[in-house]
Length: 93
Image 1 (cartoon, rainbow, N blue to C red):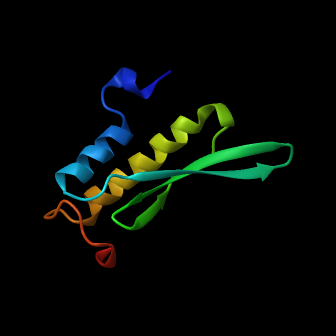
Image 2: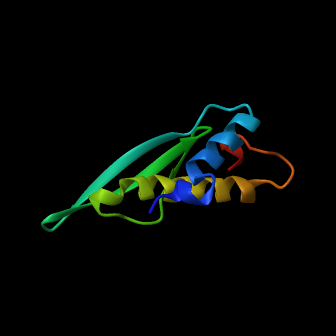
C-alpha cells in the first residue's frame, strides 16, 4: 500500500510547509539498528536545524514508511510549536 493513494504524503506536506516558510527543504536520513539476526530501520528528518526522529522502527522493505513517520512527527511538531508563526528558529524550540 502506498501513502500516495490517499493524496499528499507526509513528506510532501512537510516539504510544502518548509517552502511556505521560506526555509530549506527537509533532509531525511535513514538509520538502522541490528537486532539479533535482523536489522530494524527508522528515519530522522532535519528541518530548520532541528533533527526529529520517527516514532517507530520498520522492517527493511518498509523504509519509506519510516520516512513518512518522521515527516508526520515533524509536521505535527511544527504545528504545535507556534500557532502564530509558520516556523520558529531552532533556538525557540
